[in-house]
Image (tube, rainbow, N blue to C red; front, side, top):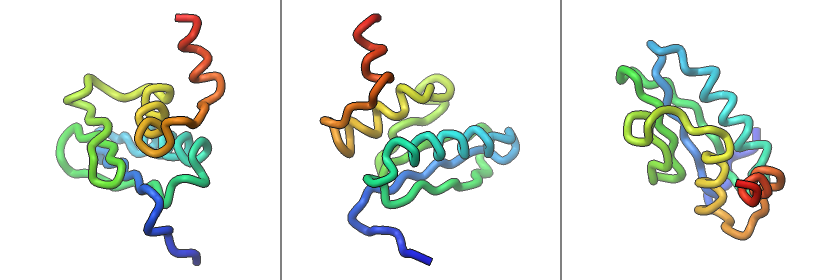
Amino acid sequence: MAATNPEKPKITITYCIGCNWMLRGAWMAQELLSTFQEQLGAVTLVPGEVGGIFEITLNDEVIWERKRDGGFPDVKELKTRVRDRINPQQDLGHIDRANSGE
């Protein structure tokens, strides 16, 4: 089994087990790995026992917190926040182009 690359950023998604948000976290992890597969060292799902927790960190920086940020991130917002921190020049394809029409 390959070890994670210590130089690459790591994302942690902590979800509330009581709220049954594991599938939401897994879906977001899959989206991030699909977009940033060569740039991320790991995406980890962590079952949280704090009522209502849904928190996403990049290394040790909280980039999304459900209560603070008002719900769950949509994929566009989450990918933009990750991209802006790990590779601001990266084109996110149709996600970026959708901004030009708004």
